[in-house]
Image (cartoon, rainbow, N blue to C red; front, top):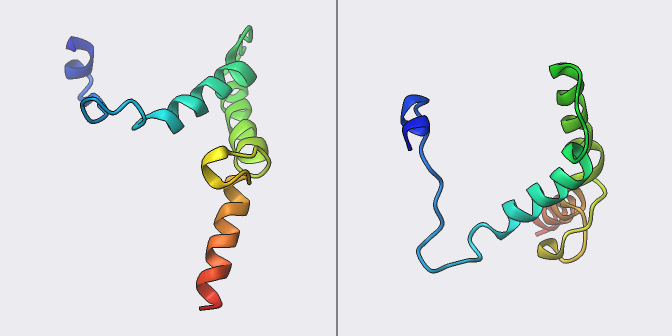
Length: 88
């Protein structure tokens, strides 16, 4: 807690007794660690930032299918959502 206080950070807590509050974030970071950081040492900050950007913007959002979006990528889910709004 001292680190958090010293750096003006607030802990993020799920509701008491609800293990599902943070499931999506936990799933993202598990996939992120496996694909981006596991056994990888980046030589520069820019190299790491590029790898993170590519993972999120070139794979995770446009390609990776998610069970919580009905088996489609977040980009496809968002496109479908907004197309339904425009046609109503």
